[in-house]
Length: 256
Length: 193
Image 1 (cartoon, each protein chain N blue to C red):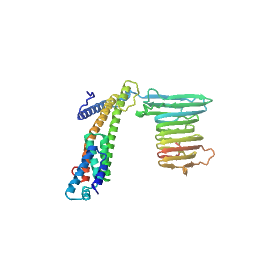
Image 2 (image 1 turned 135 degrees about the vertical axis):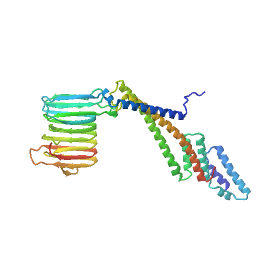
Image 3 (image 1 turned 180 degrees about the horizontal axis):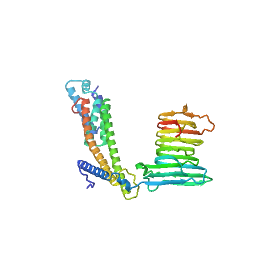
């Protein structure tokens, strides 16, 4: 005798599956409606305060490594090298932060661990940081997915390196007051807006693949643009920009 | 064309059919020749009146494969029946083969979507359970309890799609058989072969 599972008729299966689906979605929707946004407070996101004193250093090397989320970086008049907070719902622990000082050079590393399992669902880390104005700083930012809004203001940036895979970038250097700045920006996909100070001599090399290119206030063509101020004391900005897909706007503006 | 050559070409054209079917068809045509000769017609006249033996053979092969696909339903059987019908004329490439391919593509697509949704449900529900028991951090845009029910709903919706796809496949199979039979009849210009 042949033994096996005896399935009910197909029509019966379809009706039952339809009923189960409808009831499940209805219950889910009712629960979601009743709980509203209150459930979020039960699973409060982590907030990691950041307060790094610059101490006795002549130069700082700051490296930020973000997997996904957004970064707002501005300047700060305090003595801190970096302050602010990082909030998100990223696992139980925040980013790894380390600060060491060697030969009067400070090394600040902030790294958010990535998680292949958790990240695709809804990771939204918010990095709100300020950079101190006092110490000359080399800033390196690596962003996998997310938006960057960087406005260093009066912070004394000497080197800037930004690597961003996907997301929009706004880099506002209009308030920069340093003497020289070497910058390198690499972006895969996303729009890019760069504001440069009118009182600095600027040389840029731009390569962008697919997307519009809007260069305002700079002379030059074919990927090389410059802005010259006839003064030997003029601060100098040298910028290299590589963009894969997205619109690029580069504009010279009066300092804020 | 002489009777022997005619029957030889017909045998060649229907060689894919079972032996007994071949013998039956050849006996029929042999009978046509004998009747014609009795009526005083020549073998060439009879052959001309019967039509091209290769075309007749292809039509018989197509009908036989359609019948077999109907008697024992299988993907291979319907595929062979469709290909045999396409072989009856270039026009059938557009009115039989292309629609058949689109139909198969849609059925497979629905199956893949249904399977994906059905698999996504347990993942969502399992993930929500792990959040509820505190193993994983909250990373959902909906309450975990609701997510569990959404997960169950997704699973049953996916299974529903698969069941409906199966039901649709059965209907399409029957309609394809009917369409192939009608198509062969139209091409051969006969009610039945």
